[in-house]
Length: 341
Ligand SMILES: Cc1ncc(C[n+]2csc(CCOP(=O)(O)OP(=O)(O)O)c2C)c(N)n1
Ligand SMILES: [Mg+2]
Image (cartoon, rainbow, N blue to C red; front, top):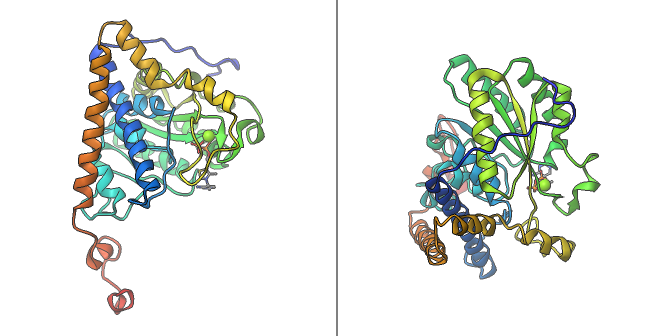
């Protein structure tokens, strides 16, 4: 199905106040957790580097919240919005980040979170290596007739990895229940998009594979949620894959060890005017759903939740040697214990 180079304008579904409040709470939790994480790094209380997603919370939260727990989401490396959106708890996130055996990946994932129970497939370090795996997950759901949808998240920088083309081809050919969910945040590490992507938008390439596509305001959480709901249900009903491009902006440096001094202050200021949390709060207040005091309460509750989860995770038992080998080998190689200890 060609969209004539213009893409599709998806309908904006009405959103009920409880859903908007839930999306807001998840975005605030994400922002506060990443802020606390950055503070801990600054104070050298924690050593796991972060690719923070400040300014992009609406994409991960809106997408994750629109999915069923049984749907598969392959998250991006940027921030924790997708995990929070899909329903991973702060306790589970921090237990894994502290590499504790109580974490959902038994402390072996660390930065690479995954949680089977909420449909979060593990984050891969080699960006783009999971395109083909996402097609496999979608094929498995199709063969099992399970009704599950798979969403593969990636950035515009990672869209240049060659596997995206072959995955789009096979997804279209086999009508896989797969959503390509790309965030165009204008940056790939220290390079602006115009230096690494040949066109302002990536989604129109989907036309070449007969995959329908749409460009969505990634800073409007209601628009993200609505687009995701529409597309996911269409894909679930057997229509084949879909390509969504979310326009957003990385309102901070690439990673926690980067001072971001190469970023243009004017662009940052312009995008701060479209901060997804501020936009959502404006809507909540205008619609009479929440007061300024309610919103401050959400932020306080988020800080308390994250702080308590970090404290609990820090005091969990550490990985033992046996924990490290569990699930890795069917039988530990002889002498391995002595070599490591
Ligand atoms: C195969 C591979 N190449 C390079 C990297 C290093 N790397 C980590 S994040 C990143 C930027 C990716 O840009 P984009 O896909 O636009 O996502 P964003 O960081 O903007 O969220 C790169 C190149 C990597 N992890 N894997
Ligand atoms: Mg990018």
